[in-house]
Length: 243
Image 1 (tube, rainbow, N blue to C red):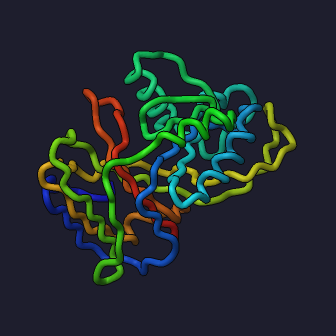
Image 2: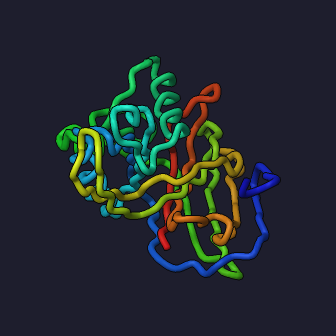
Image 3: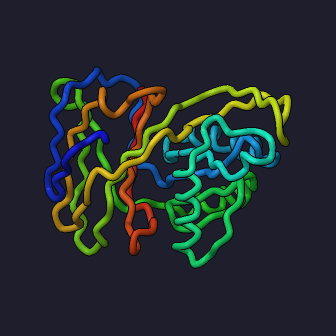
């Protein structure tokens, strides 16, 4: 576990040794795009390429969740996890559905669409917005300061830390994409709850980058997402940084 204890409310402070913050910080996006994809899915490379394109926009935070439920057809996704598949199932359940598929794109946690259909993606982005302005800045000792303002009238929400690897090129040796080399971006490597955002109080967090960016992860997203009886609800705020 990254943090052994979490304090919820106005201030969350984590004091551990950190490394220097350097790289890109993305603030005030209009949309968080979550793509559920698989290296074993023939129709996914087009969606993967589109996510790469969309993720370069200043007003979009992109995340790729590689699922594991296609591994049985001949190629085990090198980034696939049960946790990613479970997140997709949780979304479906929250919408009153049992259907999951790849490539599925979820926009701001509110609904899913086929991730390779450009017109549908552009249409969803056209009306997208996030009401919370999540701020990231460098704190003393090169830690990352996260500030989420109060917004009375909104529902309280969970504060999530999602880590990712910004790019990997994979040669697929078996399955539906056999022989293809595919560039994957914004690959989710982990998720965990940091605490609660209270609408009447806001939240402040200080995160140690040496504990956040471990293994192959070189970026992270702060997501503020409502929770509906343990299932994911709308995303109301986000910000990201990449080393």
